[in-house]
Length: 220
Ligand SMILES: [Zn+2]
Image (cartoon, rainbow, N blue to C red; front, side):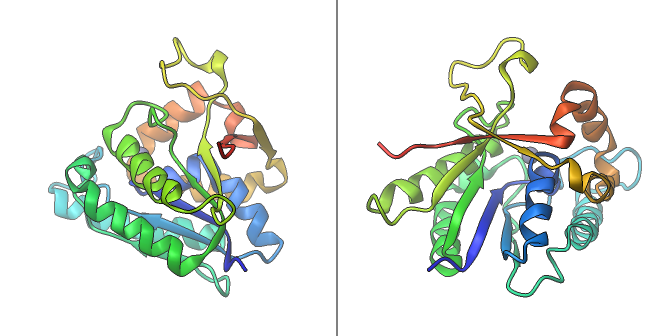
């Protein structure tokens, strides 16, 4: 039996919320335990002059993610979990075997019904997103069919992309999370140091704030 409804596996603080904050809120509102695995502290992100060193940014982003997960209700929900790892931001690919072990351990411990991560093209080509996909897909493929969690990828509507990558996977499920809009916006706003990413996300994909698209993988 599954321990978690949904386990989100992402490299950076903020990945969990921009694409799936509403989905997390909706499951938690139904008292379904969820988990987030964050592989890096996001120390390679923009600082916007809020701090100087990578170490300072790592601490700032750790605090921002904590505030965000609190706003989502994940940190106070019984049975829900957050795992923070410290792989170097921007260099997840160089640690792929260890990261794959982390994912294997997390799936074994948490027994999620659904696991959510980035698609093969990383959604935006970011190397850490691609490496995270590879780690999750490797572990998912190891499991015998019938024992695998349902696998979801973040997805974007084709018309939002110019052009889509050769590995593009279209959404095949869309969650209307408009009932959780205020909570999701509050959680997104917790990632203050990533204000430019947030602004670009809102400018390019405003529909994604209320309707979260995913690609559900069908077993071969
Ligand atoms: Zn990211």
